[in-house]
Amino acid sequence: MLTVAQALSLLAASVSPAGVEEVPLERAAGRVLAKEVRSDVDWPPFDTSAMDGYAVRVADAVAGRELPERDGLVGAGSAPPPPLSAGEAVRVMTGAPLPSGTEAIVPVERSARAAGSVRFEITPKAGAHVRRRGESVRAGAALLSAGRRLRPGDVALAALAGREPVEVFRAPRVTVAVTGDEIVRGAGAPGPGRLRDSNGPMLLAECAALGWTALRGPAVPDTPADVARLFAVAGEAEDFLITTGGVSAGDLDLLPPAAAAAGFDILFHRVAMQPGKPIAVGRRGRVWWIGLPGNPVSAAVGFHVFAREALARFEGETEPAAPRVTSLLTRAVLPSAERDRFLDAALDASESVLRVEPLRSSGSHDLAAHGRANALIHVPAGSSRLPEGAAVSCLLLSR
Image (cartoon, rainbow, N blue to C red; front, side):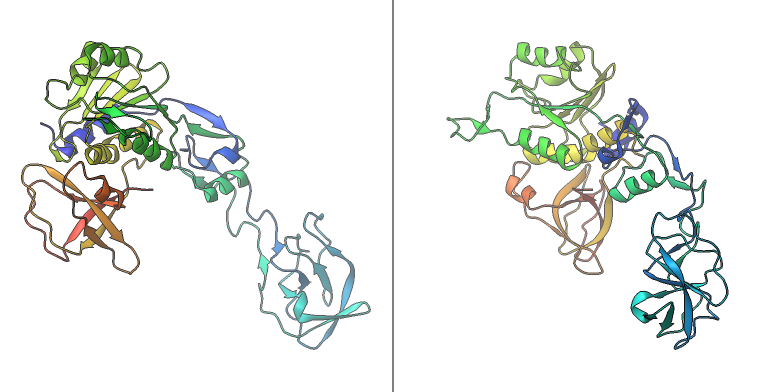
């Protein structure tokens, strides 16, 4: 049986981006950049005013002294004005290009105008409210690296650099299919021996929260024909087929052999982890299958440890794993023997030191405990008892 680290290494070696597409900037947030962005301009592109006020030379702008005011004003979008002459003030608006020779801006609210002249309440310091050309970005500077998942501020940088449209890796197409004769959909009361489907909505929501669009596949009964049909059409509408149930060792755990019979190469099946041990991952051509266990907490843990990383790698992200932080336990955690354990936890970031509470759970079916979690405590195999206050690695359940 593979360790978690070995299984993740196999994923890293096997999953790669599928291709590149162009999207308009207004739809680029959340996508992964496929090509480095460099600025083709200085920013600001010219010396400009940070305030509505007066462009002056510092030696001329003494508090209480009147200066002659040049006729007119310079607004944002105006052509560059003639150079500033000694002993004059030029009225400028925020974002306006400055006349050469400007050393400072005196804000308009610290000024008093008279006919053809202006008097200042203050003596400005050199550089006050002046934005110099290229002080933020120089032409040719690298702004964004390929493999970065774009945030709104990144989109602004891409716009500054004139990258419209922007090249991003193709996002994965995902189908979520839930297996099991016991599963029913909808709000109606399930009959004897039946369970409402929580895995399907949960995994669809997990994908949506992380920026991936997922489709809900058909419910799959525990019959060889239905399972075979699921794998026969896999890849027609998706890059990743994510299933829950049917991957353990029971008589009705039909999915791994059915996937193999349908031509999937099984990358791994069963990982030394708790919960989520039965997880299976396979590939046929360009389509991936990720078989998560049926217990809902096991399915959620498998999604965050493996599926999430596979999807992010497919999309070209350079840091595909779920983010982790180190935090201090609020109570002790039992030792872990042969398997890595992932514990539902409530991470508290309200203080300067992160603290994490292991949530009490009755097992891998305990959705109530998992619903309160915002992190998973990772307890590596072979760990001894971890006392209150011990530092632990926590996998975050959101970006």
